[in-house]
Image 1 (cartoon, rainbow, N blue to C red):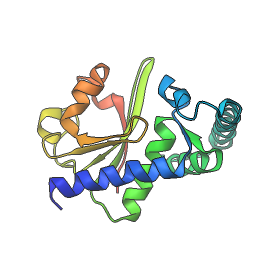
Image 2 (image 1 turned 135 degrees about the vertical axis):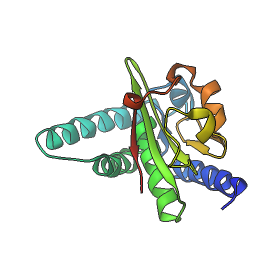
Image 3 (image 1 turned 45 degrees about the vertical axis):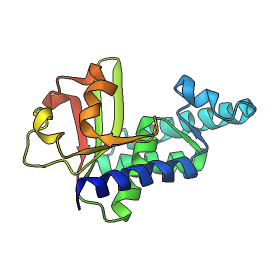
Image 4 (image 1 turned 90 degrees about the horizontal axis):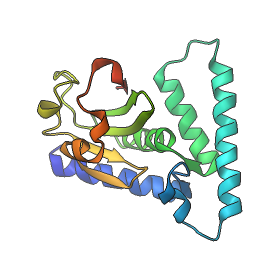
Length: 176
């Protein structure tokens, strides 16, 4: 695949999430602005997501679970509650891209103090260390369904300045 095909795949994944989850990003102001007359439904969806997340965390608290397990749980939660934050929406996009045979694709989460965010990266050169952002972002594509973004991964530095510089301890990756 070439860059433009990865970009098209990322845009298709964002559209897939938009069509699959009605109340996206109810942890953001933008999420509450969409569908302004459906306030009660949004509260129910948000409460349902929070409840399912608590149940999942409790269920896996004493079990060994890997990121693939959590990605599947987040995807199920988004579909069943019709809402999701960055983790759930990215999980839905990640699985969609995998089902379409897109490779390489990674679920990417940065957890740094009080700031965290999850998204999907397509076409990242796996041989380049994650902290060498300038080198791997050159040909990579970002898919961020929370903010309806699909574009050159170089935009990550502009969109999320708090996540740079990347450090090995900042990220969790689910790779094929």
